[in-house]
Image (cartoon, rainbow, N blue to C red; front, side, top):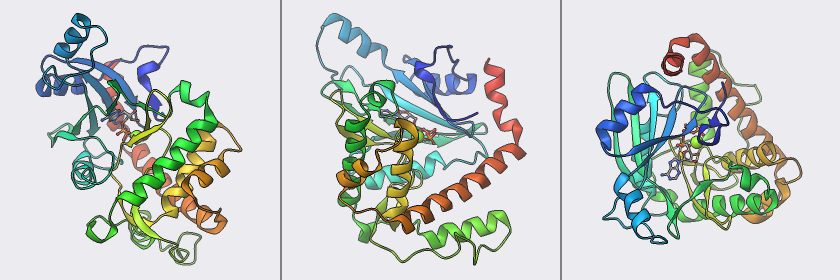
Length: 301
Ligand SMILES: Nc1ncnc2c1ncn2[C@@H]1O[C@H](COP(=O)(O)OP(=O)(O)OP(=O)(O)O)[C@@H](O)[C@H]1O
Ligand SMILES: [Mg+2]
């Protein structure tokens, strides 16, 4: 199973019962719309406020009012999942949200099934901002690639390193990898990080799906900041450029780099991609060892 935008899937995707129940507790009158399923059993749904829908029907063209309620996004992650904790993400959103465009936290918590994060839908001009992975942005790949590069630069420029308590340097990541892989990585391609180019507060998962665009295809905000922390800016740039070429097609990397405002750096780029891949391999092994973590999806179908 790979991460997928299930909200536009040709075959309808059911919201897992555990997510449905949770949504009912958090937003009793909302309609639950499936949006995204990640590789580690996590599921995101949009909770559309019925009062808001009613309000839009009664007053065509009216933009969402806070009194009428605003849609929200519920991310649920099963207990023991290999993806970042929604609670850790909530902490990061609360800190970083006062500096950069990120969703507002409405609720976060955990129970015996898993943990969750509820955020306010990011809106621009009365419409919910959409993920850059949506097909309409893929069909305007060059513009979208530029918007993604500009958005990443904006995030790095806005978040202050000196007051950030979240750290995600290459050294810390290699140490974590060494612990989970139970081997020493010294002397491997990941063991010796290249010297830092510029320390910034990195997104941590700055990919195409985690970038939101407005109706005109301009950058609006990032989501999914559970791994946000201080690191060399290339740990984000390397991942963003690869995500753009994987999701939209080859040849777009120079556009992302130019929009960000940096010259190519092949050494740091390949180092941070290799580190990412090594972490991903550990996560995939964890999921393979615990197939029960996917059980809730089977029960739902
Ligand atoms: N507050 C929000 N406003 C608008 N869209 C949102 C919001 N929160 C989440 N989304 C949408 O839901 C999708 C899934 O959310 P998120 O990226 O947090 O989940 P994830 O499972 O951690 O993703 P990944 O597979 O990248 O790890 C996002 O790509 C985005 O399209
Ligand atoms: Mg995501």
